[in-house]
Image (cartoon, rainbow, N blue to C red; front, top):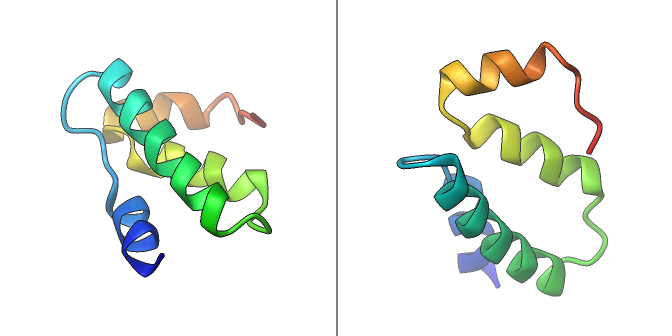
Length: 66
């Protein structure tokens, strides 16, 4: 369980956004399985913070909520 949390927290975009989304969803599913009380906004923040900084800055301008 602890390994899943560490892997999730280290997750960042290294290739395409599509590849990052796929990897993020896999890790998020493990996190949700082991930590069902974690709120959705944690995952949103984690997703955005793991994106390439250029993409991240453009996305944050829109204040996404999901």
